[in-house]
Image (cartoon, rainbow, N blue to C red; front, side):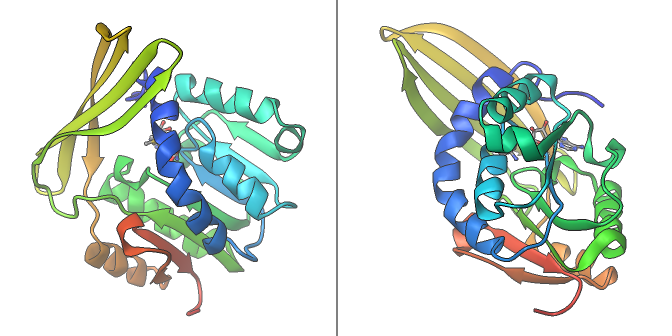
Length: 241
Ligand SMILES: C[S@@+](CC[C@H](N)C(=O)[O-])C[C@H]1O[C@@H](n2cnc3c(N)ncnc32)[C@H](O)[C@@H]1O
């Protein structure tokens, strides 16, 4: 599979960190009492793995991350923490290629579902319907836009590390009835002067709440919103909660 993060991995983990300040307590609450083993889909640099490990202190975790650049961050983050090192396995594949445990307690998919096309999503829903433990659950977020519309150029991240200030910018345009293309620009300034600029594109499949609920109903899966609406988190179970 193509690694859409090949050139941006350097910036992505640090730029996602502020988003995790808001996501962490909501994901923690959504995972309360959830069984292991846990699969973190598209674990990136491991912000979510840390939250999962704290929320479920005895669960075994499989962190699936296909991008070598982000996986290097993830592996280092896991290696530096004795608890994570003991119970997190890093799998270097896409979700649909990864060898997962036969039964899944919990599947977490944060900031990633738009990377899967409709057929791949169906495979994921089937995996949940067939392999989730009876009391298991999946937790994921749906990110805007919910329709294939243009998103104006917006700065979504800014941070300073040492003498460098980093900015992440993004805009999107429709790329078909169910898809948008994100055009991202990552910039670094040193002592106020432009020092580095990386431009990348990500293909993103649109999934709004109505379509999401309909797809899950087709697989006899039950879905409930969880946490503040603007974070877009949902919990999926095999039986009504
Ligand atoms: C926006 S990042 C989110 C990372 C992490 N979940 C977080 O929220 O910090 C999306 C991640 O999904 C991964 N990804 C893309 N396609 C994937 C696939 N088919 N299976 C698993 N992960 C995938 C990317 O490599 C990237 O790490």
